[in-house]
Length: 389
Image 1 (cartoon, rainbow, N blue to C red):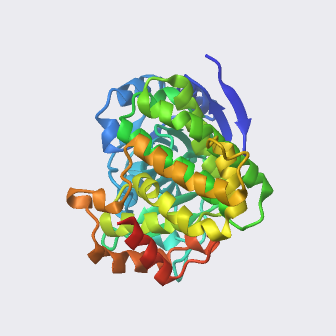
Image 2 (image 1 turned 180 degrees about the vertical axis):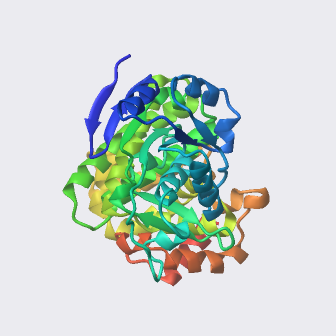
Image 3 (image 1 turned 60 degrees about the vertical axis):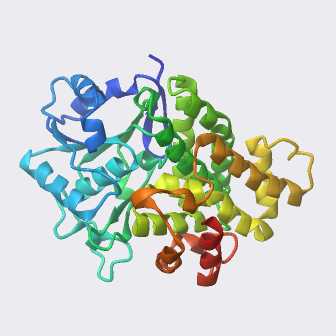
């Protein structure tokens, strides 16, 4: 078992088999009664009992009341489970939703009130004054990079509006990034989460904020994802491609401390109004927003084309290379089975022209578009969503 160890700033144990280091890590810190937080999907898979078998000597309780986009009630139920177990640590195992809820449960373990009262935009936001339990994270998808993030996104159960709880205190104390946990994910989940990782890297690079450290990370994250995502989609058992996507996902989450852009504002609106999976929403919207961004981000989009290996981009004029990157995104979506347009969605997730006013309201109020390279007003969102139908 070859595990690479590095900190950025979270201590990261990266490599096949890293999950087997969790028990020793916790026992070295005299932790005995962790609460394992995961989602319903993982709870029904052999992955969970296999992981529990790797935690000998620990009195582990499992909270798996998470499904869909994470909401307030899931966090509060998990916090109650933490106290009922008399837990002394939190293990987060899952995709972005499970890891965000795990962070929020750790916060609420010893804090009073409601989780949404700790959201950064609450009119009377509560401070973090109590100790937060030891928290370790194990991602099972390569998308949000929540395992290395310092925020938790939690929605109101009624309005479905997303709120962000943000603090460096929410950073995991250690991450065990084991690509074996992502093997054989269904192709559709691989595609949606992979487009989420790619979007994080792209939008953070395009943000006009000054952060050259994040720019370098984002560019390398795009280079890795451009090569690895189609392979991981086609062959769920390709460990190298899974490992690369897990790394690209973490890089995107590290890079977006620089901020994001209008793709995420659109995706947050689609999650709120149509309950669309966040990664899928990003995947559908990315090329539409990038086409909108072309006039104000030509040089950076051309650089993204070069880094992604778009044929002919390296020798092409900037405007040609920039447009080629947007076209490449559209081709990548088709290769991954991501719908080209919102109108292709069926059933409960269907989005129609009648939804545009509500989508525009949520997207306009979302903070992410404030760092989009091209200023995005309400009428711009109207045109973007209309074009994406």
